[in-house]
Length: 110
Length: 128
Image (cartoon, rainbow over all chains, first blue to last red; front, side, top):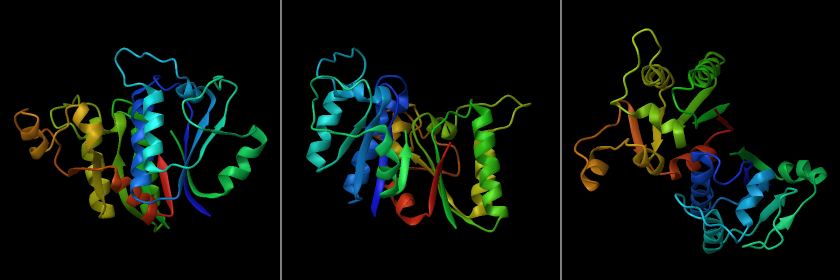
């Protein structure tokens, strides 16, 4: 069983948590947790390469940062997946979410 | 069972803090342990020492200190979230040239790694 599945649910610029939650993924990877990321619903908008936020750091750039920390699995279950994605993702169907979550000791929804 | 709490809402969302505090009390009353209480994101404002709660309202920081004392657990505050919200311990205050510490008594400013340790060392991490 794997350690930790971190799920993002909201638009990457929707709230302060949305802008800070990527740090949690990095911390988990730094501590050698067997972690994966799941992008649900509007959080998949972070994969869009065409983002120019004025006040915040680009959510796409932050996702790209995860590759440096050897995050292997970024799962996506969303009808808002952009045509081009800034990082490689694994699309999964809504019906497969339960099985995915059952593979992890902990699931955090942020 | 070993529990840890992740508090991500501001203390001004008093109902959420009320629920979290009630949950913490229930955990202890049922004979479980509270390993760590971790404040992250907007939750770090709970540890802002210069915030003043109106006299006829509950002060979240005081209530958390009581629970932590009862549980013998730590009140940890994420350094990155806290710093951007003006919650600075002595070292950070010096580093950013911001005068003196603004962390409420009983709270410690720590790295996010502490939360991951809580995840490793607890059976359940419950977020409010």
